Amino acid sequence: MYRKYCLKLKRYREISLLGIFVAVISFKRKYPRGEQMVFKMFLRVTLEAFPALFTVILLLGGIYLGVVTPTEAGALSSAYAILISILIYHNLGPKKMWKIIKKSAANTATLALLAGSSMLFSYIISLEQVPRVIAAFVMGLTENKYIFLFIVNIVFLLLGCVLDVSTIQLVFVPMVLPLVNAFGIDLVHFGVVICLNMMIGHSTPPFGMLLFIVSGLGKAKISGVIREIIPMIAVMIALLFAITYIPNIVMWIPNNLM
Figure 1: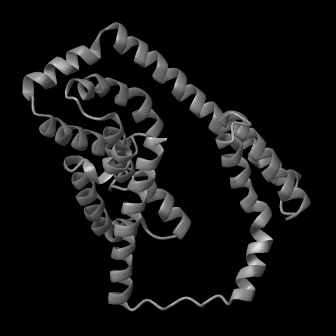
Figure 2: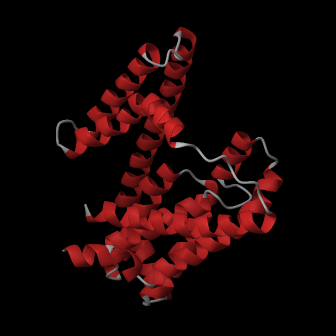
């Protein structure tokens, strides 16, 4: 529970900082205001969207109430989403369904291969005692946990630029955990730092995965996306180092609840 609260708090702070940045840029460039939605229209749109919104209630409610496991909740929510798409929204036909099945199968196969490879790699590095070698090497460089956290930030920012989140979590995070324990760093604090690192890395030029996703969705040139995101990356890196060296920013909630 405490980890979830900390991760949510991190996201809220990050969204707030980026929201302020977007507001300043929008005001400076005099972007047009959107049309205000009247309450009657808001109510109508909400009612139309309620069957879809109920998917989230079904997913999280089933998990938190202990009715289903997370895996079962995912399957149940997927079945419900398919059902309302066919019966209520009428936007899912046989052709679209077949495309979804093929894409889901490809994604599942990719994740299965990634998980299997990472487990094999983890077994090899454990067998060869690579974490202990790395720990001894880093300990030989520094015994200061703040310098260690600086090194971790740089390494994981670079990894986030070129690797998928799943690969980093399954392969590289277990390699540094012995060091985290050796330096006495709180695992909740370290988890927040790593999550933010990977998110920033995926947004960092020139290989950040999110850059290409945004470019494709917005039908914009990648050079334009990079130009606009650099100031945002500076804001996020400032937040990253604030969280890294001032743990109470993310730890005051679990510390007060425990």
